[in-house]
Length: 100
Ligand SMILES: [Zn+2]
Ligand SMILES: [Zn+2]
Image (tube, rainbow, N blue to C red; front, top):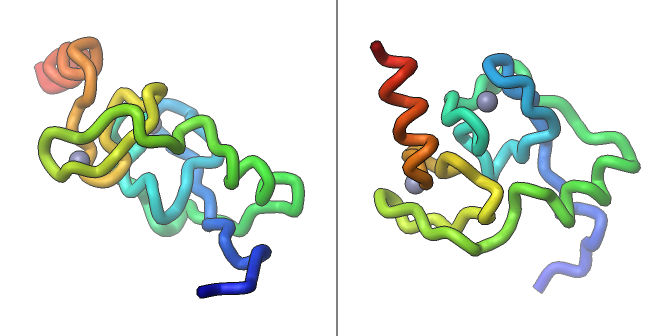
């Protein structure tokens, strides 16, 4: 059991491809919006205010389970934050469009 309430925040990163900001360094190894892999060079420490946002992150939750790796993702995620698999048909279509 940990008693360090303040040690639970994660580093953040911004997606260079779609402009999503403040993604979680640990939970979102891929961008939940466009599926791009995380660039470790873009990670940064959150400000005091952002630490609170991290606890109640818009892309955190367990509403959608990834069919590939079984990681729970928030309903707002288009792509699995762990492996980048598209979680919605719209996301899948977008992937196909990009690869053409
Ligand atoms: Zn993105
Ligand atoms: Zn996954």
